[in-house]
Length: 95
Image 1: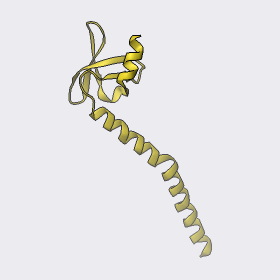
Image 2: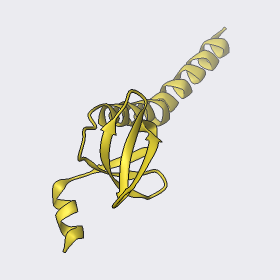
Image 3: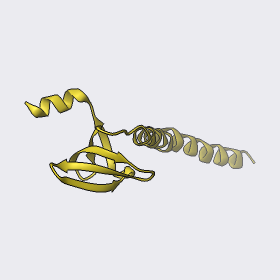
């Protein structure tokens, strides 16, 4: 009977360890990304998951229209955005 309790505690402990080391941080990161994507607005400078720098031209429900260069606009999914660049990063690129 004692070995059954120890076995159950061992499994519960492993699950708790995996939860705090793997699952919880991933959920937190995913929540931050969803919040970032939800707050996108026109003229935000973004970087796609493919590494392409773009500027948001229009925000749709599940997608964005972004400007890659003069007269070059592309529609991409919101989930394809990896980061939003700050205005100070945009000014450094112009120099």
